[in-house]
Image (cartoon, rainbow, N blue to C red; front, top):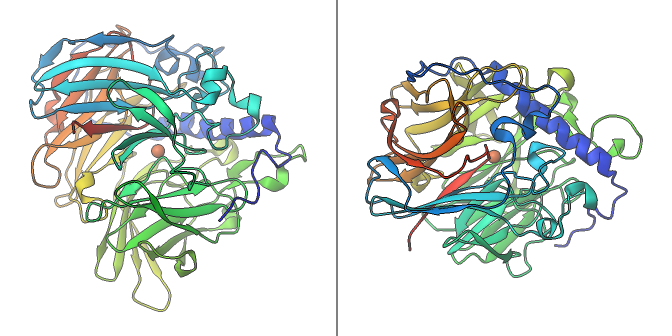
Length: 492
Ligand SMILES: [Fe+2]
């Protein structure tokens, strides 16, 4: 399969691309205003107002703003007790424009923040840029028009598979990272076999070690499914037939299925060059659908079921129950819908697709009537039933995103337990790290930021006792800006 077109070959307006990303950004900016209550505050400190300068873009101030240059520090101070069995690297990706400014939060150079743990000690913290061609040449995304291949900022997530630690920028090729110091080894093309973009959310089947992933793009082929074997070699690539370029941020697997959701946030290629409209936008007339194909299957085996228009960035996990495919998601009622974009609440839903009949049938159940995002599961059970889910909650703020605490949802009992870091502290996405044999037995890791002190620390929580707060807090030499997705890389 070869790419027949690319944005670089298309008469693609760079201004329009940036406006598109701005639209995406706006949705994220508005969504947290509607995230209802995130648990009681556990902080005893006096609240210091979080002020926002309206003359400065929200992503260039407070803890969204970039830090200058790279930092490393060794033998970090630990409050509490780091579980001694945690030997490895926690690293998280994010956007940090080296120029100090960017067109949007999503358009800065990728910067990794890592903490190395060993036998109860925090050996080091490092912040390191991903050495992409854009970074090395001091270019911004608007200098090249649109991302493609190595020309992306590699700033969304980290993936560990086949003995390789990779970044993902979602809209281009990944970069391989050295976990010993977060240095960039180079762009990773899977020996030249990756001819699409590389999602920020691949799924590794715990039974086979295969990595299932996809690339979506703005022009055909819009969606391509790939499988890499446990060594990291791409062994299967299939175009998934869809009729338009939609923003597909994640997907899911079960032990038998691959599940895509094609939702009506469209890249409007018809608007390119016409001077009107946003290239990305909500278009409910496109409809919304879930597609299911056999794990490792061919594109023409996909079966679709129509659902009500909505948007889902992230699933918690998915599994089989007999003929049913069950997918747990953070569901937004809509996304990128002009002024109203993101202004409806999001909720945790359970989708259920029956595969028994000649055509698929769909049911949708609201599980939690409050807004929770960045769902996290125990990846030893990816594609299998999981009882435990963790989420990041956000506080209401009229002028900026404000990430709040941690929520633990027990799907067996329906209990939702939260930890709030206090009025002056904020967290990002958590990551689950196994600490016992059973599903959900382990630890959560995340960075926190204190806006009263302008400091950050690294936190470890007991995954099934988040209400107790961190069991360990590692002081960091400098604040860690809010970012996107992280990972734990156990020591080999
Ligand atoms: Fe994501």
